[in-house]
Amino acid sequence: MLTDLTIKNVAIIDTLQITFKPGLTVLTGETGAGKSIIIDAVGLIMGSRASSDLIRSGEEEAVVEAIFDISALPEIKQQLAEAGFEAADELLIKRSLSRSGRNRIFINGGMATLALLTDIAPRLINIYGQHDSQTLLKPENHLRLLDAYAGLNENREAFAQLFQRLNMLRSTIAGLDSTEREAAHRADLLAYQAQEISQAALKDGEEEQLEEQRLLLAHAEKLATGSGDAFERLYGGDGAILGQLRRISATISELAAIDPALQGNAASIESAFLQLEDAAITLRDYSSRIEADPGTLQAIDDRLDLIGRLKKKYAPGIAEILAYKTEIDTELEQLQGITHSRQDLESEREHLEAELKQQGGELTLLRAAAAVKLKQVLEAEAHQLAMKGAVIEPALEALAEPRVGGYEKIEFLFSPNPGETPRPLARIASGGELSRLMLAIKQVLPDSDVPTLVFDEVDTGIGGATSELVGKKLKNVATRQQVLCITHLPQVAVFADQQLRVEKLITDGRTSTRIRELDLNERTSEVARMLAGATVTDSALKHAAEMLAAGSKI
Image (cartoon, rainbow, N blue to C red; front, top):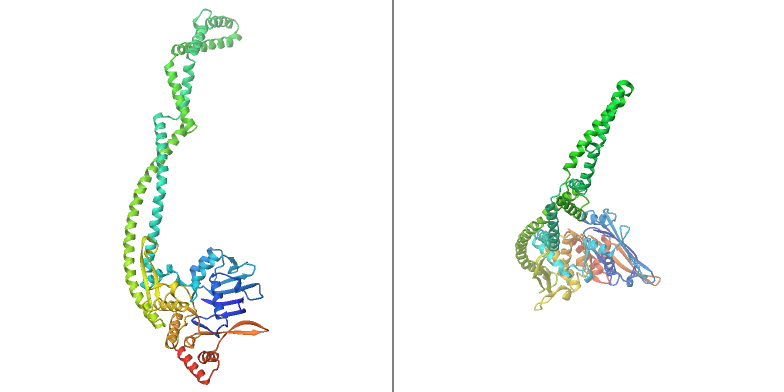
């Protein structure tokens, strides 16, 4: 609720500080005292357009500050915290206007944007009677009012959640179109790569073995010739090394028999002979095995060339190519799963569309029935509030495509006089009629998430029993929400829990406004003034006291 309002240098107000109480607060006073300026100041707190024309003459800056108790509004506290502002039980909103155009907004001491203000403020306070902040003038609010009256908020929320799920699913499916095209191209490429690698039948370590084989085959002739010649020189030919070594070994052995000191040499020569003999035999066998095989060499060259090409395309080695092949196989499985995923998504989409249509159809029928009843009760309330013959038509219109709120939209059409075609409220209803229509709605739809309501012009064009009824209805609303009301009617003022008198003063040739909270005696005098005019009689005072006593019992 609104607890305090401070206004500085706005129009004829120099400095004004108001403390508001729960329940019904009425602002009374002479015409031109500045009551409407207070409403304008509240409008600034709600985010209405700021004009330098509002700044008091001779001043450079105007300031409006409002303090709200938001202890019962955790969602607003959370929003403030998420936006980086202090989230206490008290909310301070400050707005300053400068002739230089440097208009600023502060929330709990921090600089804020107009967007944040216009999002938060209308959930704290609403003004009824001025067109720039009129709930009834916004058709997007009408469907919410109808649903609240019919008790369809849960149905509406369920439909909205289903609608959002369906939209997200449709977006996902739409995104799959491009994804599937990309996936198809990717799958073709991977399938080709997988087939190429599979056909190569690579084996880890194969390249090294092939390189060794290729080296032998490429030098087969040299190996055969060289090993054969070495055998001949060691063993097979005339003057072979082994023949000479045998003769030397025999000689040294004879000498060792004479001089034992040569026995070691004889043993070494004998050992060398045996080793060389083994080597010669091995070379002979090796030479006999070596054969030139151009066909095998070409096959090895071709195989190594294939491996080389695959290494350039996929990875630096066979082990890495085989690992890449495993990755390809996994990705191909995933890409193939996209098709199955789309089928599942399409099936879910069809299911959600059918469910949305069913829920939307039920919501449409319930709304149509509720609209008929709402029309009756609103017109009955309006007729009591000095709008005899007024017609209120909650006109439902089917939508070509469903929206988050359902398959239809609604706009309240209004005709103040019998025989006239109902038309949109913004085009036909006066400020007073709008205020009384909202008062009627508040009788039908008492629950609201807006804690403070301001009624301006609600008593325009009414009097007598109707004005008393307006006062009672305002009092009824004020049992659930804080209500501020500007009134010229004593029949309304007597129902107030708090009465504030707005007065215009002239000091040193300058006009200013002040406001006072009235006690019971002052209220009696003020109500008597409202009854009798400039000359307050004893009879008027007595009547005022009786009216206040009766009003306090409601």
